[in-house]
Length: 127
Image 1 (tube, rainbow, N blue to C red):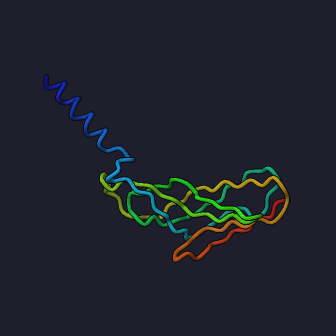
Image 2 (cartoon, helix red, strand yellow):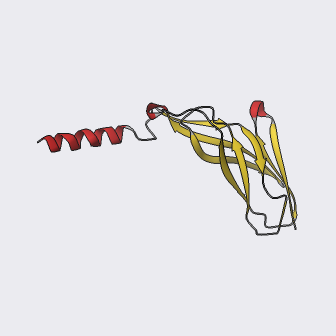
Image 3 (spheres, one colour):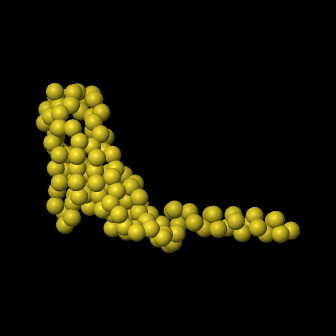
């Protein structure tokens, strides 16, 4: 009987700590503080850009890059997600990889939202 009670309690604790718990789950923009990576590449070659960002809440983790593209310019925001109900971490910077591949030669500008909507840019020449 104690085993069954233990299993029920364990199940309830695990399911109540789901990341998508409506009362605790959040998504938030994370301002970019630095961008680094290659400045030249070839057509159809993946380039990994290191994007350093400062989460605004301690337990958030990288979720995705929210992008809009206009011609050869792509503007991105870092979206973090987290769960405040099970948080015991401190805020620290994070590095996420932005993958870039161009199918045509040209000069491409990657813009990332920083603090106070300032844009941090990285230019890549594709040959």
